[in-house]
Length: 325
Picture 1 (tube, rainbow, N blue to C red):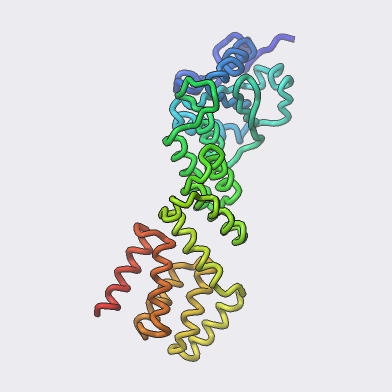
Picture 2 (cartoon, one colour):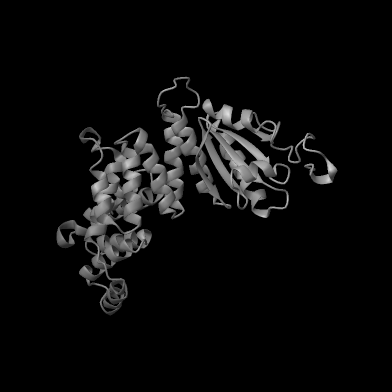
């Protein structure tokens, strides 16, 4: 049976998805006749991502452009090949493609990674960035190549984006990839520790921080994580504690201990802005209470958030107004 594409065009005709070919030097369409050269041979120089798709596949229409954007952002550190399985059933059969979209990554002529189904943009970026970072795509050394500072920064950014989205597993994967190439990288150590902390594993987070070399112990990201862990360990663990403390304050707004404990409980529950507001209110009511406990805790929060965080800047301004009024 001859292989006929949509509209009765034979396999030798132009690919149906012409937007990939020609739109970017890093993305191209491929088929049975050119697959070996486009993927197997090409992957000996730079990793090649193969996107198996079909015109009738809805999720492919979302995943394909996301992959292309991430590959183009890698600027030559990784290539992408698109294969329409309707026109190339032999390739799909040989690689045991069971459903689409399916994505494989090839290096040195062999598949080294992959996934099935549409995935979020953050995971697409992490997948491409990890390949690009480990590839040494711009280098010609055939030993184990590192991606260089620009790729490390890219994977770190993917990890930070995953953390912000609450995708702990993807963040840990991104930071772990950096640490494979750069053991002790302080930003990656801090990021991995933060992922464990967000998952509730404080002990593992503390152990992760020990991976950093002694001379990097004062790195801003490491100090911020140390401060975060200190805050988490000192905070009340019971979720019912917040309601009880609010009730105590409603009965007696001058119960400074209740307000302080409420701030800790709010912060433990992820409500940092509310926690800061309660501590500022405590400073306003009695700045010297319990040996400046509220002000000292605010300083710890500022260190955890970082000096350029908008919450830090705003709270510092308010605290200064209270202290010097």
